[in-house]
Amino acid sequence: MIFGAAPDPDGSEQRYRAAESAMWAHHGMSPTERWIEADALGIRVHAKEHGEGRPVVFIHGTPTAGGVFVPLVGQLSGVRAIVVDRPGCALSDPLDFDDFTPDRMREVIDGWAPAVVKAVSDEPVDLVASSAGGLVALVLASRHPELIRSVALLGAPAVEGMNLPGSMRLGTFAPVARAVARHRVNERDLRRSFKSMGHGDLVRNGGLSTADLEWRYALSRDTTTYAHEMQLMRLAATWRGPRPGWVASTAEIESLAAPSLWVAGEHDPFATPERIGEWASHARGSTVRVMPDSGHQPWIDHPADHARILEDWWASIGAGRASEGDTE
Image (cartoon, rainbow, N blue to C red):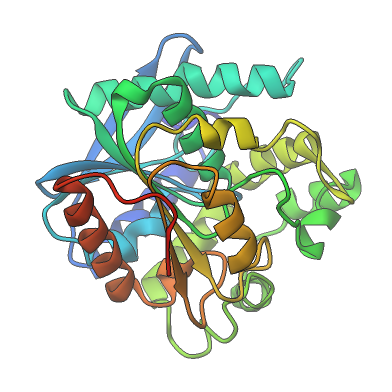
């Protein structure tokens, strides 16, 4: 099923929408739905928009969807947040992976990401991205510097030299990938996943609300996100790790014209803070922040603190570009 373009005979889209709306409402927001036509690819990209102020586009990792940023968006002020579902995730139309190569992947990013920015803003936007979304942000910013005011990478982005945790390496095997795509995530699965991603006892300690958890269950149960993303994972990686060319290169980091913020979770299994700092050193105007006791999605551990980091950084670059190699 292609959500947003096809009937909903089994009610799965309706159930997903209900869970997504309940999560936004729990965090005190009622966003506007947006559909962006990516004419170059013949697909539609789904997004939710909330707030007023500087336009900020949020791009998530894998296998998840834009809703992962909702706790953070709820803590931000002075921001018009455009929270995107990457193609194939949640309600966005899927990608065609036939003859997919690293070059084709970048062409595809160029086919939808600039279209999103141009549709939502007449001025350059700030990007906030995580994990595989970091690859999208780096490709977009390097190819279209005129569209991007700043890039904030939360947790280790998909960059050459990243580690792939064991749980994701297993997903590169076809039988495991098929099993993951069919499986319906439950609380035990989330606890195990969060622990492997460096978030410890986040679920047990109530770090995520029931509404947040129900959204994650619905994403697995009522959309084809996991099947789509596991297919992409098998193309982009082997059990040894990412295949050459399927993650952002040093050259793409060096081509960044916009100032960049690199937020490293202390316990991120994809890359140590030191490795993230090394990547950031290749970008002009880079700033690094290390979040103690945080994992691969550092904002979910302390969303209010993370929002203040972003707001302070945006304020600092509003008066002038961040100094090169500013690392903390």
